[in-house]
Length: 116
Length: 113
Image 1 (cartoon, rainbow over the protein chains, first blue to last red):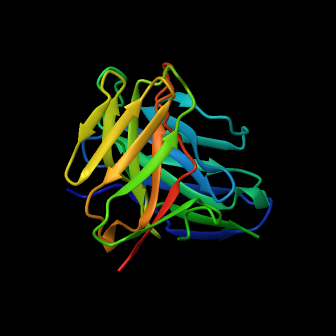
Image 2 (cartoon, rainbow over the protein chains, first blue to last red):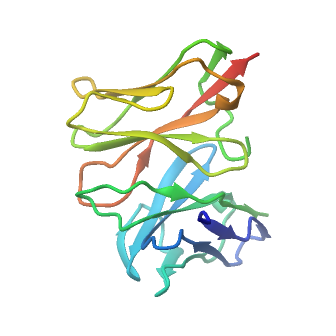
Image 3 (tube, rainbow over the protein chains, first blue to last red):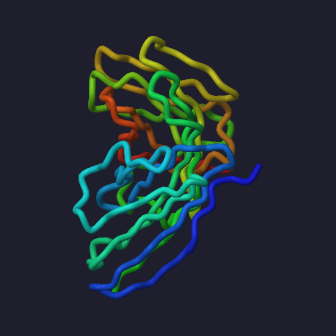
């Protein structure tokens, strides 16, 4: 069974540009979460999608957005990039994210974004 | 590793010894806790989890202990191996209706041969 895949693995952008990152969850998984990882702030939750709906959002500015498609694949977009957006962006998928029976989140390898 | 902090607390152990990694969590209402392992260049990998109605859970070579009184979580690794060298994160669910994980800052484990 293939794991979570993220594309691209590495990306270099300049300030002011926008970027779109893609995540393909494990087959059958319907919940996709996004996290930002930086040396200073650690792993921080961005948002979570289930059945094409955003169920929860972390404390990030509106420049960070995402969406989920009917096949559960997800994309996140960052507009007007800032130097501080340089980070490893991780995607995680789980079966359904049911709070009553918490499902393990499987992480992808991440996309390393560098903003110059 | 490229994905973790430069100033993480580090635990250095001799190969074959037992390791204990500690974590203080933030929310007394959190009902689910997970330990993740992250190797350089990879995403976090699930190790073991525990629900708040338990105080101990064992896996293969790993044990998680939960002390809700002091909001403390620990991961014990038996007979530590070189392949255990990585950064370890604890995570909690926060206890609210959201679906997010709240991660600790991480501990780097170095296994000396």
